[in-house]
Length: 522
Image 1 (cartoon, rainbow, N blue to C red):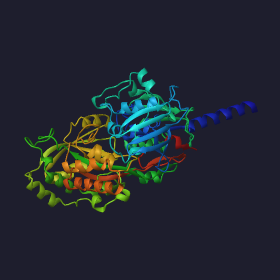
Image 2: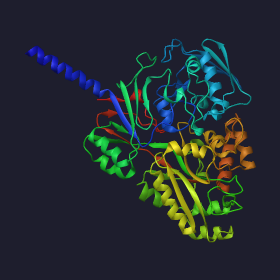
Image 3: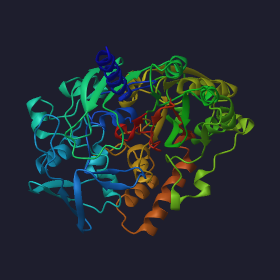
Image 4: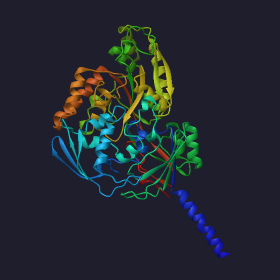
């Protein structure tokens, strides 16, 4: 009898431990694809980043450290050499080598890649030997290592075997093997994928690195409703939610068994406008484009009561700014760049009249409804504020899975976008977001097509300037030029608290990236 009781107790203990090592987490949307090059979107990158690794990446202090590369040297201003980590295996058992690095960079440069702007900044990779790669650049890249940290390494053998040698063309709704399967070198392996339902991972017990947490299995479930997501956390159905709504934070802070993990995010939320077409696709104005007039852009900006958005809608979980970068520029920080245009409805009305639109016009605002904190609610609030200018806004809100393919095809007149990540250098905003559309991924996230010759010249020069002081002045001048022309309308930088069960230990990162290998379930 005692032996039977002992067996039962042991079985119960094993069951409890197994359950405790499964991390069940949720947020309002889902990863877009399992192809790490197809969609440069935070949740997609964060989930794929548990499976795929880069040559260098950021540790707990957000400082770059060796990952699949063990050491490197800049042998000349335009030459880099990397020693690769030996004895690393992909999840399918194939060995990691220089061939995979060269293949991955080339794959990331394909037209269907959404990270081509970063891959092209790395120049041309060449295999020196099995565990050595050399990069040759046309121009100096002052943030080469930071760009390199954004390039996940794929298995050439796996990609060729599964006809996945080119990135899935997500914006044109293409699907392929890499949309639902993965084989990286990272700490977790993809087990199953049901888009918009559930994605399951398991620990890679053969991983070369060190686990600081105890998670053995990860189950991700997208839950769009804020109330349902929070209820799932409180009831214990999930262990962690990435994006609790601001209005639920006071309740969560006072709920037994639950905790809030506070931290800022490197992410700017802003409004973009089509400034390329001579006539907007979705507007009552025919024969011309009102957004080509800086007075109209400035009027919309000055009609935004940003403090009301911050206090009433975001419950203080936002930092209003006039800057267009995801975070203040550190040593480059400039109060002039960060300063917002004042909220001034009368001035805005005067600008609209001067531009020839005293009666306003109608236009559609495209907006995701499960990507940023209160994204649809912000768009609805903007619509009510702009109505005071007689600008009638039709809010076209949709899930991120429909939103991003739409705007990436430039099928928009007015849109909301958030931009950010681990890198705080202005280059990763200037080239993909603020420059006009061009080759090698330049302007690939400038969905409004805004282009200014002076800004182009300044941004292009800063991207290859090695002298830090000269580069600082070029960057500041480019950002000031953007603000002067109101090429986009900045709103705020998000503040992203996480929420978890009390037994979950996790490290908050400003890129809003949950590293599963650092998570401990007690």
